Length: 272
Ligand SMILES: [Zn+2]
Image 1: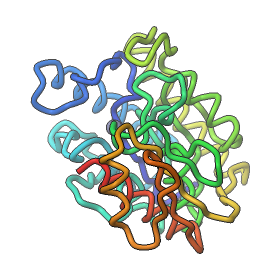
Image 2: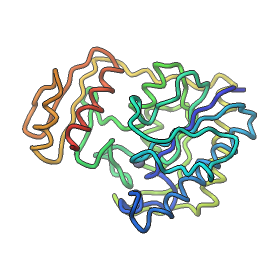
Image 3: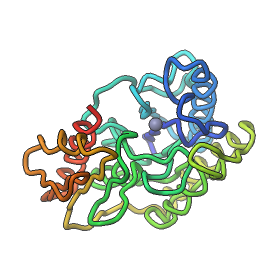
Image 4: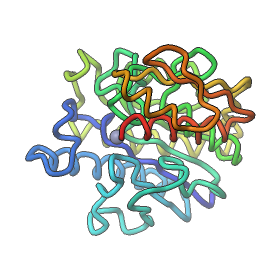
């Protein structure tokens, strides 16, 4: 059984969450989304513990990364709170035997609920001409570090994407996308039961040698299409970046980690 497991916890793919305001700390709907997110994370931790995992780190991976109230998190897990973190949603995963992603969502440009990639100020992030989701970027980092992703939870659009890029992983569908800001959701109770069972199944697959590492093949050309021209203009402050058109900035990287860090730099410059 895996000695150490890593859980990366986002919010937009949580059952019962379907609007932007409730994902933003300070909004009056936020505490409800926060509670739903925490309960799904705890369900994943319960599944890992039931499967015999000894050490669990949860990385808060949403917004300012201060959503997981420590006193409400399962006492068996450590929690990594706050930002900035060089590896963002993957921070802390090095040395783990297994990773789970909860509350994840489809990429910008996909028809998923609350679909986006890193910020809300861009139309699409691409790697080698294809839409590159937050899942792909962070599972790719974990692949470099030898950590397999065994379970992901989110909506059905993310599920189709996961089947394509991480076919060995358990996918837990907690809601069905109706539009960008509407979803038909499982009840929180059923979503948590499915996530708990999914986490246990991920450990079984890992123990059976059925999980693989995501290896993203080169070349590593990043492209970010921004919503406004001035955002693309700001992103061009990144060394080695190339203006493709008034909305699109490219970065040719030598390896996947450089591509990841370039993607972070471009998206943050464009969001500023
Ligand atoms: Zn998020």
